[in-house]
Structures are given as structure tokens and as C-alpha cells.
Length: 121
Image (cartoon, rainbow, N blue to C red; front, side):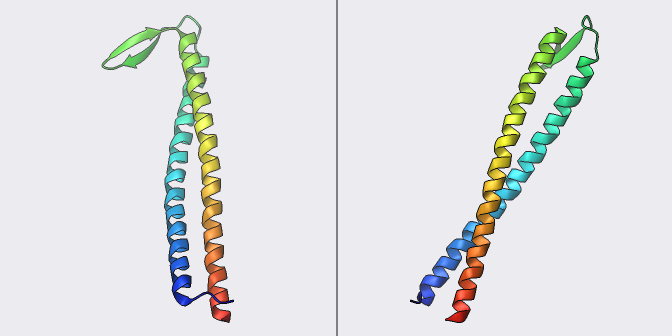
């Protein structure tokens, strides 16, 4: 049973649109992943520097236009919390990227199948 040309064209346009949207979303997610990984690396470096400090060192954090003295332990806890949140974000972005790449690959395969079946008809 053959599918009419109009239906094939409509199906092809829908699949191509889905593939283009997936590709755009893949690029966005890759950018977000790169930004999160940079931020995680910066936190890791900061945590390393803070861990090397003696416990009685004065540590300051910027709050608006001023700096406030904060205990080293509090800074370490904040950095650990932020690192955990970033790991969670990176993990979810990697899952989203995998899903989008699979969707894009499947769309391309469907287009190829339609083109091959259209050539046989």
C-alpha cells in the first residue's frame, strides 16, 4: 500500500521540522552544559584554595557593593552546596542532551527511510 505524494511531503516536512528543532535544542543544551561545567570548575578551584587556608583566616564575600567577613567553614559549606547543585544540573542536562540527540538521529533515519521507500514506488 502506497502513501499519496501529498501525505509523504507533509510527513517529510514534519520530520524535517522536528529534526531542525532538535538540532537547535542540542546546540542550546551544549552551551548550557559548557557554562555549567565552567562554573563547576571555578567552584572546584575556589574550594581547593579555601581548603588550603588555615581555619582562623579572615575570609570575605561580596554582598552588593560591600564585603562581609564570613567564617571559613561557612564558605566551605556554601561551595559544597553549590557544587552539588551544579552536579545535579549537569546530570539533568546530559540526560536531556542524550534524549535530543536520539530524537535527532531517529528523525534523520525516518527521513532516509521515507526517501528510500519513495524511490522504490
